[in-house]
Each structure stands twice: as structure tokens, then as C-alpha cells.
Image (cartoon, rainbow, N blue to C red):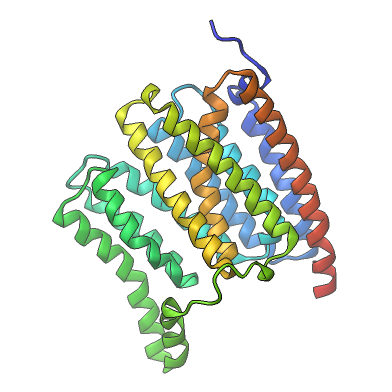
Length: 317
């Protein structure tokens, strides 16, 4: 019988989500007291967390009872305190979570036009606030065939319509108002590339936070690849999708750090199931030690980021 360590007791606890949620709301509430623009982001976080819970429940991402996926997501999102006032980042996170929730329902379904329309509708909405979301499309269409096993002409047409609908409405809005310059600037940004790996654009807290989340992605990815034989085929396929999108976003972030806020949201949403899978399903002394280090480091980083962001809010006001 495998020994239950502190890591396993926490990961399998039914009290985990009720304990983590007030902690996250408290941090968000502190920032919202001084900057009301954080409130819409908080609302997006609440909906995103609900979608991550549904994602875990509907797909049995972890083969035991555990809320680690949604809790890791909530903790990592809260840790990136400097993103609280970025409604763009919040919407991108919500849309990526919505994409996963809808798209994964199409697994091995060649007539899942409805779910895929909604999934790619989320991508289309995300592209309105961050047009570079469209760079994900080739990868998502590939994963539709290789990981979701749902490749069919009707499904691909539904996905295209889902992406086009919000963008057509967006174009129509600017055409109606005669504001063609803003419309053109939005989409021509896809062809604009700034200096590669220009990390001077990022603050110390942003670099440390991104490195910490990427470290968690590395640990989670390694675990999923090494221990994938213990999961069923469907779960392996879904985690393969998380890994592909997470590492696409990481490489994109490393090359073009000016898109930090939106890309960090993509990484958090994709890496949370990976590290949650690791924490919930490992029982070694090493994994228990890793859990303690990551938990303590995340709390310290959250406090550091909160301390760093509040003075900026006061200066801005």
C-alpha cells in the first residue's frame, strides 16, 4: 500500500478548494480595494475556475478524487498579481478555459459541430482582445485530428465559422463607424515582430513568476510523459493537447515577451492540469518535497508580487 504523504493528503482533501478559494479572493480583494479595474478580472477568474472544475469533472483528468487542477489554476492566476488590472489577460484566460471545456467534448466525435463551434468561438473572442491568439489555430486544428480524433469536414467547417463569427462582427462594427484605421491596425499586428527575446520589457517580478510557472510546466510535462502508461488512452490524448499548447505558448513568450500578459495566461491554463496531475498521483519523497517547495515558493511569490504591484497602483492614481 502506498504511503500517503502531506502532498497526497492535501491533493485528495475535499477541503482543498474551499480553503484555496477564500485565499485567492482575499488577494484579489486587496487589489480591488485600490483599483476597481481588477473587479472585471476577478469575475473572469471566477468563471474560468468554474470551467476548469467542469473540465476536470467531465474528462476525469485525474483518476482519483482531487481538486488539484482547479486549485493550481486559481493559485497560479492569483500569484500573477500584476495581471489583475489587465482585462485582456483575464479574457484570454477565460477563452482558453472555455476552449478546452468545449473542445474536449468532441473527443472521437466526427459530428461534434456544436461543441467545436463554441470551442473555436472562444478562440475568435480571444482574438478580438489579443489578435495573436490566431497564431494558435494551425496547432489547434492539428490537435483536433491527432489528439481529439475528431477530424471531419463538418467539424473543421464548424471551427472556422466559430473563429469567423466574432471577427466578422468586430469588422462590421468598425465599418459601421468608419474607423478603418483601428480595424487595419488590429489585424496587421499579426505581421509585426519586435526584437526577439527582448526581456528588458519585463519587470523582475514578471520574469520570476513566468520562470516559476514554466518550471511547474516542465515538472508536469515530464511526469505525464513518463507515467502516461498509467492513464487511459483518452486521458493521454487530452494531456498531450495541454502539453502542446503550453509549450507553444512558452516558446512564443520566450521569442516575443511583449505579449507577456496574454501568453502567461495561456501557459497557466495549460500547465495547471499538468502540475495538478503530478501532485495528485505521485507518492514519493521527492514529489512530496517538490510539493512543499512549490507551495512555499508560490506563497512567497504571491506576497512579493502583491507588494510590488500596490505601490504602482498608488503611483498611477
